[in-house]
Length: 478
Image (cartoon, rainbow, N blue to C red; front, side):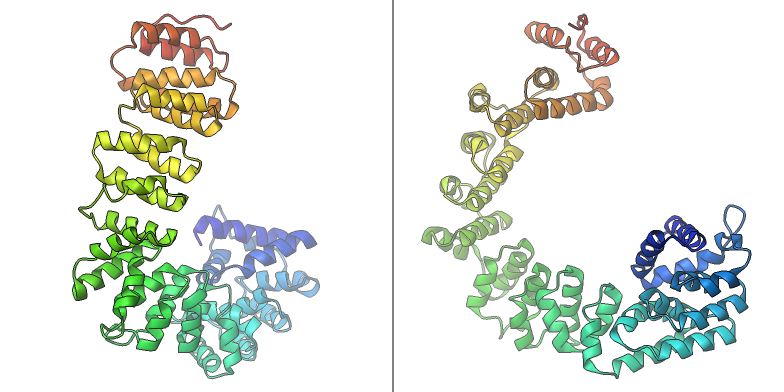
């Protein structure tokens, strides 16, 4: 948490306590509950550090009435006060509150520099070992482990949780705070394996997989083979690279060469080359067998990544495949390995593909080249929003005045989305490219630009700037 964010939260905390508005109180309590361990320590420091003249908590003249009549939020705020007697009274109030923010605030005070405050906070915290409380306390204690004050209390609490019921660790492994989850997962290999298989956080999943490796970096055979089926690509790639050679069979490695993830395919090719040489024949056999679409796509991507010498020829037949996934992989392989003429010949027809991702892949390699007028005419004739957008994108890369002419034409057209895209591009050119644009439009282009500049969708200044750079006389708007 940055200093600015912490100050905003500190101010919001004081305002919520002073106003006692239930809606605002609930919102601030939610913000506090979402703080990380380091975030709690940072907020505690900022609460007493003066800025803009004084600490925000210094604006409270008397904390005792707020403590007497306020709820958990008032006690949390008071626990950060400079006055040790107020902090001690706040700890007493927090000890009877079961909210996560109250538990985290108590954990912070366990590192207080006043012995009476820290001992009272420790007495309250040490009794809170239920998963809901522990999930709020552990992130703070993990952060305190890096500091001198409070380190021993944090170690005692964490040791007690680690030696407690396994059900508590299982619950903590599903906590929202990442540091808490990783700490809990580190204590049990079975939980680490389970979370490495399916956790939605890829960082947590990969960390769990790495925690299962031995001192030499290799994964146990049964665990490693299981991780090859993880839902997280990073875990599959890690397992591919860290299984013993005698456990990663030829068939398993061949399947990994056809994984949907590039990271997994890369690790698999490295292992394959070490044991069986060039992986190219595996990819080519998949293309020859015309198997599943996902396997064909992976084979094309693998050949592309491996710079296979059979490209682009091996990919061209798959530009007409029924699967958009395959057509896209084929388009990328052709675009990265074909000559300029080959790219225009094979990928220009895909600009009208029914799949947007295939058309986008083709456009990536076609734009910026000398696209034949017939291709642009076919895009214009198609008359769909996508075809018009693709045609505009190609013209915007065809040269300065082709770009300006295309933008002005679209700006005067009936497609509002295309007009918006053209206007943004035209304004970007005025800001970044007009000053370095050399040469002038042809006579026919100049006449068309002069006519199109009459659009009321541009300001007078914008029309004058375009006219000046183009060297033409600006017409009056109609």
